[in-house]
Image (cartoon, rainbow, N blue to C red; front, top):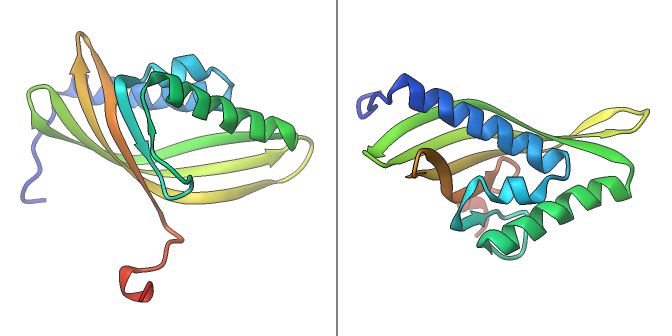
Length: 149
């Protein structure tokens, strides 16, 4: 890792707490709390959805739809984020990359992997907190660029 820059331990711990909190919020229907993990004009870009989601109100509405969709089919959905790499961009910004699995469990039934993705985030310091300014999601099942022809 030739360009790897060390990030202070307390910042790495704060990022892990942020991502754990964020997953618990979206999975339990706490859309306002989930949206607050982003900056006021935070962006969420994912090929799983037709348009980017930008700003607190739209982020909260997105999280509400995600939870409602799981409830509608009587499932519990979990965001499982692993293998986080946290790198310093500058004194007030970090680049965070991790693997995100979305797992769905039918109430009283089996669990299944819905999708496996990679998240690339720009995280910035807002006061004493870290918040996500931009999230870009890529899906592992997407065709390679050379295959899209």
